[in-house]
Amino acid sequence: MDNRPIGFFDSGLGGLTCIPYLMDALPTERIIYFGDTARTPYGSKAVSTIRAFSFEISDFLVESGVKMIVIACNTVSSTCIDDLRKRHPSTPILGIISPAAHTTANICGPENRIGVIGTKATIQSNAYRTKILGYNRELDIAQTACPALVPLIEEGIILHEIMDLSIRYYLDHFISYNAIDTLVLGCTHYPLIRNNIQKLYPNLRIVDPSQEILRSIGDALARYGIFAASAGAEHTFYASDLSENFVNMIRRIFESTNPNIVFKTIDAETLRRGRNGANHGY
Image 1 (cartoon, rainbow, N blue to C red):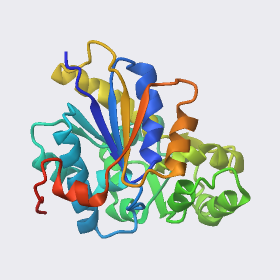
Image 2 (tube, one colour; image 1 turned 180 degrees about the vertical axis):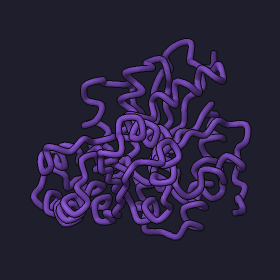
Image 3 (cartoon, rainbow, N blue to C red; image 1 turned 90 degrees about the horizontal axis):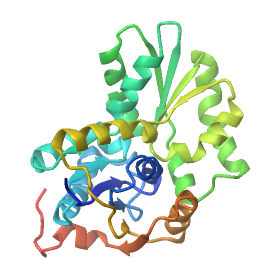
Image 4 (cartoon, helix red, strand yellow; image 1 turned 180 degrees about the horizontal axis):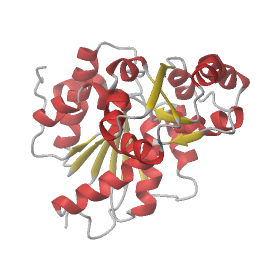
């Protein structure tokens, strides 16, 4: 048994969509979440920049005493998960892409047309295509980047005509041209607009990686024997910019579960130097 918290991180608030599933299934586990809201979005940045930011955050989480890190960010999972595992070999690190790819391959056959949407970095990495085809070579997969969606979601522009117009701008031709029937939400921000997408395209089957990661977390906790014996005192949510949108989104997501939540801010310079004041080199 291990009562240390599980660390989650994302480029912003999208990774929050993973947390309710964990709280429902594993209520004794405590969470430390970091959202890099001051530097979001990651998807349009150079891989070297994404890697440097991810090193800073993972260092912070390890120094905070987490027992496991969940990369609740498709961009990071698709570009530098192997680098993070090399950097922290004693800490289990889970990515969000493999579980969703496995589910997609299991529920689809050659008759289906799979669409993957994500950030530019995620789509350019071909991570979803590679993983899905690794499970089933017969599947038909199309991909497209939707770079404007994350900034809109981060600004809280969800229940608004602008969001629906943006979704249609990216997906109308993509879905019709490729005859898509199964859509993989290749960004943890996108579950926050799942209802918008389902309303616009009611016949789509949607795969939500934020939900699929739960099985991998449970498997890893069992494999390493690190389930929590009792519920922790509180969940801590860090942000590099503790904006009103970030706080409101957390309260909106968790209003039904009412967890004990603490909000904290940690700026980029503190991340770079680490909790002990050392200037990390990348």
